[in-house]
Amino acid sequence: MVAAEEAPEEGMGRIVERDGSVVAVAEAADLQDADAQGLAVNVGIYAFRCSWLWDALQDLALSPSGELYLTAVVEKASNAGLQVERTWVEDPLEALGINTRAHLARAEAALRQRINARWLKAGVTLVDPATSYIDTGVTLGRDTVIQPNTMLRGNTTIGEECEIGPNAIIGDSVVGNRCSIGASVIEGATLEDDVDVGHFCRLREGAYLEQGVHIGTSAEVKASRLQRGAKIGHFSYVGDADIGERVNIGAGTITCNFDGVRKNKTIVEEGAFIGSDTLLVAPVRIGARSVTGAGAVVNHDVPADSLAVGIPARVRRRTLPPDSHELEPSTTNLTGPLGP
Image (tube, rainbow, N blue to C red; front, side):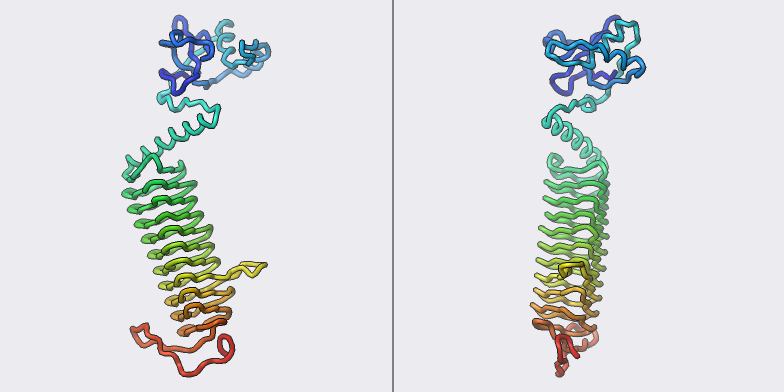
């Protein structure tokens, strides 16, 4: 049986020994404070020889409180001339008993303190360890800073030199080096190096952000890949999409990915500029370096190097002068929603 020198909590029984041998366990309810002095604490962990135990349990007597005490078999074994040994637990917190929700909360707090101490020793900064909640399956890189009220859950990996929080929740995700994440929720996502995510964002299952991606405020990304250098500024939803390199998603942009039956894909090719309040009605493809005007409702594919404006959006061709982002629209408006 396992014993502790100090009781980690109230209500724990004591081990009674005689001539160096264990002879009984005294329950806390039956002890006076003076009786407990100098006695080892019974932490409630035992290893029995089962062939003996099953028979011993058959004739246990009820305690004065009307309960059956498993600890009574210790005295029964001693009286039968069997050897009863005790071994010490090094850390009394290992012996916390859990009988109520309050006990469970106390045990969880002790485990959090142990986890946090390990990461502090490993070179991670916890600004307020008391409000840093880190699961056992989490891995943190050196010189990463965890701000207050942050929860890191499940099998989450965070690289070096990151800043997380305050008020961030990250679960079952991979975060690269030198990333910054504000008060946002990230679940089942992957962020490569040098990604920054602002406040009040949500990255859901299947979100993949390549190196240097920027997510601003109040944006949601689900089952989508944002390639290197892509940006989503504010108040946008990107779902079931493939966003190319250096694409800029303007404030209020929505990928309308669900038609009531199935989810549909949105593809925005490299260098495109999506104007504020654009609705991309999937399935739809925006060609490379194309631009949508503010408030456009795009329900047909937009060719590369084009400008799409209006509700529904119409396209007019444009050219890009070398090393310039100035629009040069043609003088010909194409017929139909997006041309002939």
